[in-house]
Image (cartoon, rainbow, N blue to C red; front, side, top):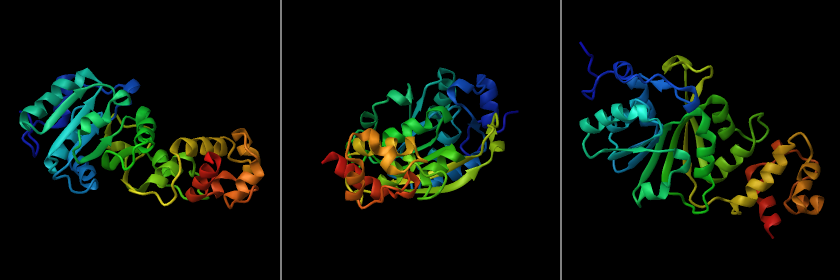
Length: 282
């Protein structure tokens, strides 16, 4: 006899077995089966009523079901693995008109087309192998404010630490600067490997990002990426050495930004890097 969960659908373990959904390493898959945990993730995104929620990599649909149970007006789930589509179709039948499944690759998705002018939150247990490229893409769009109201995402714990790291932290780097320049970033809670099937070798973390409508220091995102790439590409060197690749009068350029040329990249805050990008642009 099949067990039924809170939404009237079979337990996720039974769904995975029935559809033969063994996790594939090349797709970065690790499935969450505990609906209490997936609902906690959904609640970390704040109120979902009135929002279209975009989910990446739903797999058998554990988080998808939680988002619907927690009140999302509509969920748009993007799934690359065609094996998961029949399981997701069963959720669509249980939640008519509230779940749309897109079979495709999130890395090549036209997000503005999916958003279509609606209020959007992105909530996802991101496949580990595409998590950082997706986040970087969402953070570096030339149009700002972005199409999304918030991001509530699961990463490997070390990536979450990089996103939220402060000046002087070992994890502080390019991802910290881009994330915190354009967003308020908060690590919500950790998720044990034991929560997944199969269990990964690392702990995961949920991070919530809310866009800052007007960043305190304005600059060109492309140039900011160029400056941080140079600085952290040789992070143990002083700025006067690491920034030589920018083809500028390095010492003068750094001093005009109000920084000491002897500083290292991990000692420069977000505003300092933005000033460097402004001066390089001029």
